[in-house]
Length: 138
Image (cartoon, rainbow, N blue to C red; front, side):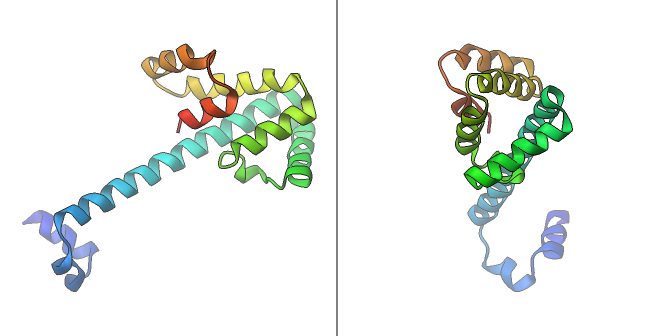
């Protein structure tokens, strides 16, 4: 009965009558996946910014973001969604130095995952490029 009270307080009564269990489970799964994706995007975005600022400092990091926006139409808040464009722009700007930055970003993101998961990622690291690894972490 408590569950019904909870559902009635969050879903209008007329909608509740037309819902079935599979719809409720589907909605729950969608919300869970959305929350997981948002958490990943937040972690990845923070890791990218942290690594860039640590290596280049604040001013140069802002110049990198400006370069990416001007030349690749990608804003800082879109980097995780457009990882391939970010990597391409970084590689064009930094040439072979981009590899070092990408590796540091991956290390930072890996460190935020559990040890078991991190070991799994490290095993695949040599077989996958930066973009593939970042997408796998989602």
